[in-house]
Each structure stands twice: as C-alpha cells, then as structure tokens.
Length: 193
Image (cartoon, rainbow, N blue to C red; front, side, top):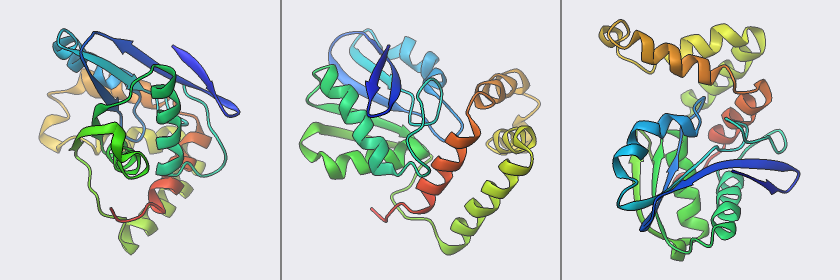
C-alpha cells in the first residue's frame, strides 16, 4: 500500500493479526528483505514492513533524511493504520530509525530489537567514510552498490549465497541516487542514543 506523506509517498505492507511488529530495513534495502521472516511470524502477529524514505517504493524528501524524519514518516503510516503500540525490529539503518522513533514517541513502542545496528553515533572516521561513500556513489552508482552489498557478507559466504546476494543487489540498484545520498547524510549526523 502507498500513502501520501508531505510531498512524497510511503510504501508499506500490512498483514496478519495480533500484536503489531514494525519491520524497518537497512541502507540499500527495502521491505522485500523481510519476506521470509514475515511468512514465519504473520500467523500470530500483525506485520507492517515499511520502505524508509528514499528506498524501495518510498520517495525522497529533501537532501538529508534524518533518522527523526524517517521516524515521523513511520508515525504517519502507523497513525493511518491506527497502530498505537508496537514492537520494532530494525536492521542496521532501520535500527537507527527505530531508536529515533522510540525517543520521539516513547508511549507508542513496547519492544525494540536492533539487528546489526547500534545506538552509538558515527565516529569521526565513520563520518569520513560516509563522505567517501557519497563521492563514490556519485562517481559510479553500480559499482558502489555492488561492492556495498558484497561487503555485507563474509568472504567465505559470498559464493555460498551467490543467488541471494544477486537478488539483494538487484533490489539495491532500485534505490535512487538521491535516496542513497540523503540516507548517508542522515546516518552521518544521527545522534548518540
């Protein structure tokens, strides 16, 4: 489903019944990353998977997608769905967004799981790496995405999961340049939580 938020649209899926679980993907991912997990847990829960700003089928808003801005977009979706309390599972950047959401709307969150994520702000070196990533993606979008996705997997698993990695790369290549840069800028300036 798609709803309008400010000057763009936000895509989400909503399936099952019971306690609401909100699934938030990581950088260069989208809500499709959760398909196998959703099929295993939707029988006992209401599962809402949201494409974050500038990713998947969700549009961009401005030049920097702060974690707070993404959390506000999520709150707009949940208000539309009349979800007043939920468990959040955030992968990587999705964890940063879940933390921002929990700070902005503490009464609307009853559980939080960070998957390969952290509550810490970027170090100076990590911020420099994000600036390098912005330059790299501007210079060669396809190479940047390919290397970024491959680096998510241990070298010994790259051959073993070749088909899955290719599928993830294909989804990541759908992320617009503007969305990638706005997310990198937003992650770079996120605060320590």
